Image (cartoon, rainbow, N blue to C red; front, side, top):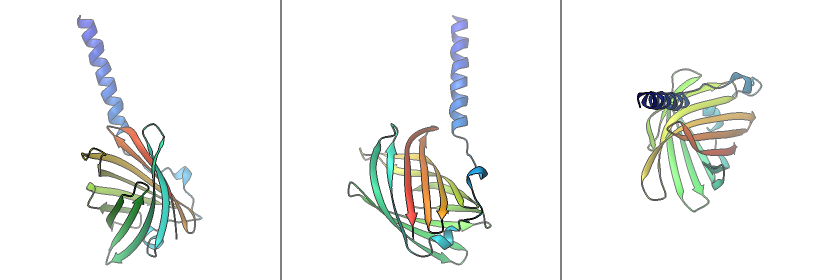
Length: 181
């Protein structure tokens, strides 16, 4: 009996460690960045940009798609980015990011549906941002998802965006999009 309890405790400890390590924050991978195209989000989104994408569910099945327009504005040292989404099911959504740059690479961000403060980093042609997004579920309940958002400037006027949504360290959805101006 004691032996079985010990095994259960070891297994629970191992599972907890794996879940906690899955929640760890990662950094942009310099192997996937280039110095030919440098991403400056304040410049890219200073003029109107638009994009479209698909949200995939936990089973990697296309769940719904969207069209988005962007409008950015610099006010003093701060940058405000308005995102207007139109989803395939007719839902309209607006998110207004307030970004504060600590230097030319590191920034923080807030928005009405972001819990706490987003942390972002620019590295050559890439952007990496981690934040918690509060979203409404189909039943009307709210859920907080940990977002691992990555953007890559692939050409002068094109960004590829890939954002993973996680709960308890497990990927529950993924957004893939292209933005251009």
